[in-house]
Image 1 (cartoon, one colour):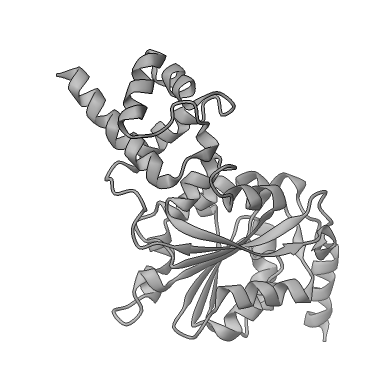
Image 2: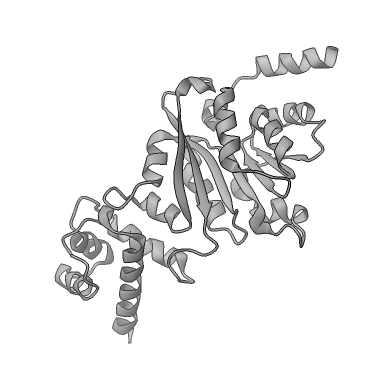
Length: 288
């Protein structure tokens, strides 16, 4: 009884750190939506980023084979280990997810009958670090098969945008996965209550990127150049970022049957692939 009282007291007295973007999910309906979107079974290994007070972790453990919960805040680790002591398939790790490779987290849990591609990521992501975490998993050697993440509403909509409203973030995520908005999440679903609404976003990860290249960084550099001045025409934005004459860029684009007057936000990932290949060949020719 004393141990139970102490745990309740610890949780009641715990104060979320604003600097870590901590907002803990307390809405049971939203928890069930996250769980449903993850489509888990006993073959799955789940990496949960930012388990907080472990409310979702316990639910994940009840349906998945194994759960690796990575928590940055050392204050929460003790609470998590005590709360989840009865869950033999949960491993709590204290650390910065960006300093931990996915392979190191799940390697000993994924044998021949459970390949690394079978693992999934579930996360209530701090808004300020959404992009780095997505990049960390989507560009890893050991990619998850699925990610279900809670993100700021505007960020989630930007990630799932279609051509016409694309941003660099959308291209960098959709290069590796197919995003689907699962549900909106009101601010009152969290404690403390954030100032913004959220979304549950499901990312079905491709086995290989949509653009076939060994130089993903180079591809994204070209895309970044295109979005250098997103409200400008594509020929001007690329020309300025690549330090090339606008007329020359327009010629290269016309060779791909891409209108040089379009804006970067209207392009498909396939079209970015054509642009990347064309400009790589152009650079190689210029260096000869």
